[in-house]
Image (cartoon, rainbow, N blue to C red):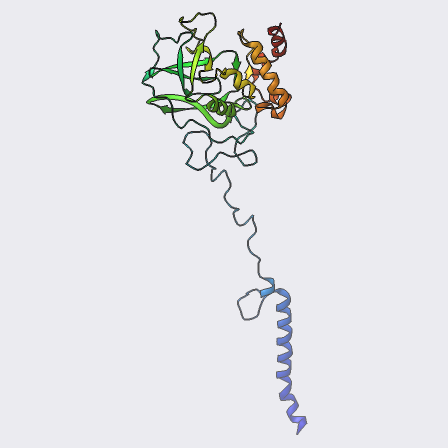
Length: 306
């Protein structure tokens, strides 16, 4: 009898409709009934953002390799070039990286020396010596019978490089640090002098003296001299200036000023060495002390040519 059975079917139907409504509501709220509030797959939280998850370690936390010259470079490595990161700052007054890609040209060997010259030992005008340890573009040892005489070339000034101290032949000596310059081209000037002069035999010439007379010293006890290669008679100072590796040092009088001024003018005109970036750019990159004396350079060179 249908009229008697219909009431028994109604409750299950109402229950089904109620459950369907609950499921729809749960879907809209992002939860699944009977699963402890577990979120649905479409609305689960995405991976942590950068703010929640630490970013990769920065350079400050993981320092880049030092460039202070405190360690010898590993064989087969090279120093950073101009397009590579160096970590050096460009703040005025600080040591800045060089803009050239000259390789590590530090001397692989030096002339054997037994000791430094004593206070009463001097090089003399006309003496033959061998260029030993090179400190920078204008300063090196002249070695005679195993004795090292620290020598500064007269009449020129080479761009300054940052220096490190290393044991050489049983003595602590200074030398340029690769690509760490006080003046633009300091490292490259050193490299050029190594190329021109390392292990070369030279004749020493000094101003205000005659052959056999002791050469003068500067305030740092360096011999002040011109050096000419015995193999071809080349003036190594002039050769360095002509290659764009040094300036004619017009701050002080010198017998070869006109020659060095002409060599510098040729290097500027040809854009050689440091002058490849232009004279104004070189002046802008000079150390303040260099810039002070260089401003009178042209007039003094002209006077020397008279």
